[in-house]
Length: 112
Length: 114
Image 1 (cartoon, one colour):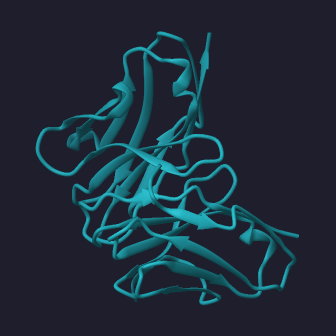
Image 2 (cartoon, rainbow over the protein chains, first blue to last red):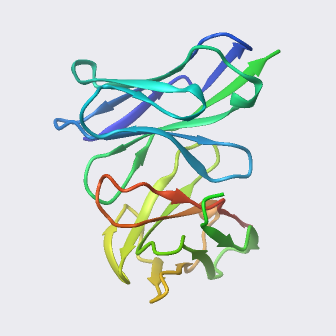
Image 3 (cartoon, rainbow over the protein chains, first blue to last red):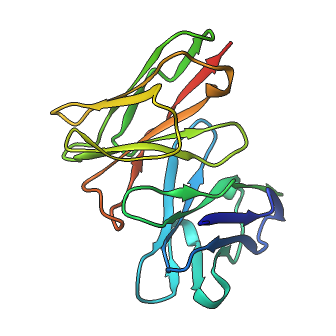
């Protein structure tokens, strides 16, 4: 069955520290991969996406993610956390044309 | 600001009632998708409409239905509400229905079923 797994429902980092959010998917065919961010009382905002081509994808707000086919992973990183990065992050996968399948989400808190 | 607006922002209903949620897509977008986000979970795909026709549906019962209008605004209707229908309902619009299309999400409607 096709699925999306985010490891860790909550991540706490210090301001200025590395942010690493993990996402794995299960599929026999490489899907399209996305990371979204959700701030309180808001909808989802696209951070970045991978469709084809270069496996290291850069997104907004200093985030980037690397698609590793052999590991079926699409982990999200940011070298230096900022207080404004506190939010919930969702990995999403498009296995077919019409729907996104989301992971359960990872809440990021940033300590001063 | 995504240009996608949803109404109402909050809604309280009782079990067994019916509810209609509305979504105004970004200008020119002919595709709308609806997602249900239960507390502490990721969004779950309900269905998608493309040019007023449903062209994909997730694992939701028939009491979840939708409409898309010629101006591409849309509605999500839920009949015979159950307690488990309490969730944030998100709509997302896009220029097309292909896999590479960027989705623009609204801020959602928070539905509470008592």
